[in-house]
Length: 270
Image (cartoon, rainbow, N blue to C red):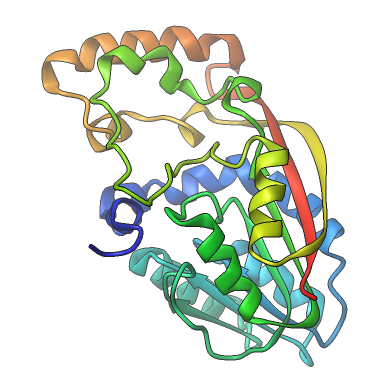
């Protein structure tokens, strides 16, 4: 069985990736918080785990300057292509991107001073193995800093709770595998335990809340329902339920205000 089989399939689905630039409008506000926490220094070598379309990696590349370097790693071939296009457009010569599974694969360019991630580490079906592999890419004394969501209950913009009864059941993890998804690291004590089990020291976390004002399709649009597996005979009911749920965030016909609850973890490689 392939590692991260479910997520590998999802993140290489062209329908999902086509929506990605819309989704980035929701999370771009978190980048400044993450970069402040990681405190990159000129000349550092950085590994961006689950780099997606490369926007955070490009911001990190600007922070470390021409003497530093950033490698963005992601399981998605289409997002890797998007990241490479953006790097070329920006003329960023100190950032490269590769298609890898950071749960098991090795990345060239290390050892790294820093591993960072913006919502890219919640999709490992063997999280301790994955974080141990990430740690193996760090220099002695290297640090990891990542942003992940707090619990689903603290992020009411996530609409699936409103349509759970209309969706096909999520796949059951295979023996020895863990559930994946945006909120699996929501319990900070549980996540800290994963990091310690992977060999990290000095584990700390800070909770953050902020609100972003973006179009509603930054979170949901009709194309997403088909991707989520909503059957045709339930599509109308799903659309109605989601519209009702999302009404609480509407500011105007073109803008909604969404409260985001996330947390930033920091830890050190011995």
